[in-house]
Length: 402
Length: 237
Ligand SMILES: Nc1ncnc2c1ncn2[C@@H]1O[C@H](COP(=O)(O)OP(=O)(O)O)[C@@H](O)[C@H]1O
Ligand SMILES: [Mg+2]
Image 1 (cartoon, rainbow over the protein chains, first blue to last red):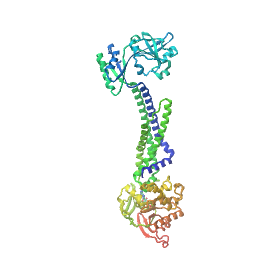
Image 2 (tube, rainbow over the protein chains, first blue to last red):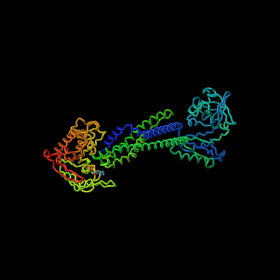
Image 3 (cartoon, rainbow over the protein chains, first blue to last red):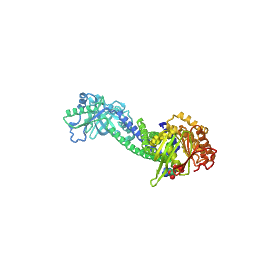
Image 4 (cartoon, rainbow over the protein chains, first blue to last red):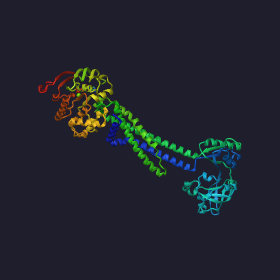
């Protein structure tokens, strides 16, 4: 008996017991559909988050002064010279964006807004992918001449002036004991983007000032972080090492700096998502096993019910492997049909849930292939014992079975 | 000689007791013979048929089928022999309920690896041969007992076996259906089929050409049947 024949015969038997076959499939359906839903949503979520981070850019290395280290002294902090040094001495460095920041306020005579005050250079606009709504960003001349100018975000502009058209207005930018008057030269979207809309007024504003006036604006004006962009990420590790060595040499210290590639938060989010996916997959795996046991149970019942049929088939010349194949294909088909239904259900469910939590679904062909693979494996694994039992039946005893 | 058995013994080992169902039976059957196996219930007729049909194994002795010693063969080789050389007709028909008449007749050919189109052609021919050309797509539960047994005969014939074995083929049938089956067997035998049939009915045995009578696992009589000349009761031991 060949495979086509046994498939035909198996389909016939599945069709003959529709309700029973369906109930048997249920475990497989639940298992497969939950795997597909969860994995697809997890994958989609991961991609959405990664995509958002990719917008910001990943060819970035952040060089930091180890903040946890209490032995850090003033002379260990970065200087603007360091920034120039990195750019000049290390090949592959595109530009360097040093920054210093503190919490503070943007004030006019009318109103004030809580804000992050950041002393930056002209590259910060590109680094943060800032979207300018009015005017311009801090430029090289502002920095060279240490001009008292500022770029503030739209939320603060609206909160204080009721409009973003405020180029030329003077505001007071303050941090703890320090404050200066600065002319607004530009208005950009809040750096927290979409999230800012959710938090509304509670979202801190942004005030950017030239890095060269940081001492006037920030109480703690040390530069503890520099973002460095590379032309090419392939040798990022080596370049990061080189940068740290160069900085250590110029500051005559050791072990005070750390470099991290891209965005460590992304890794954290991804690993959380991975764990989540893994846990759910494990649960789904268990449900597949339970489903498989259900399949085995029904196949055993089926073998008993059809003992005479098996006897007859053997009397007509069926070899042990023919009987084996017949029952194995039957459990395989039950599981495969369950797998297909589960897959359809899983994708649909994923689409619905994805829509609800606003995550684009990513159904990878691998997942579909894997669910076919898994359901087939369950079918074969749990069908093996009943099929073997059927194949081993003695023809005479099987024929005599009442 | 198509069948040759020598000193055949069959012991059923039920654990507590051992039942000697055949106690050293020797029998030879030529091609194109039509033999009735008779005897009281429990005399060992079915046991013999099952061994002849390669469904069961003998305990002692020798069984040569079509010049091959089958007493030494493995389970799967026996399956192949059942498939090619033996056609079995059971008292209780043993049709597969989910399959149509055609599907049932196709079965032995499926196991013989006959391709689909030829299978259908041959199955149709076999069903027409037993007068069921108009019932091919009926399921067993849509047919009478006689029709079911005719499907079973078509199924037994379809691989062109060396012998046709029938264990009380009319045991579940009324007289009319039984006569129909006997007509088919007779014409098959006329065409050259070797048939061995178990029956305990005189009338049925009258259709055959030779009667082998069993009692308690041994042959007590083996005589040709001369139709018309034999009066009722004469072939009974
Ligand atoms: N599977 C078996 N286990 C034990 N004893 C059996 C078995 N099959 C048949 N027998 C015994 O063997 C003897 C012959 O049985 P059988 O060949 O079926 O007789 P018949 O077909 O002539 O009525 C009987 O005594 C019966 O009880
Ligand atoms: Mg019997």
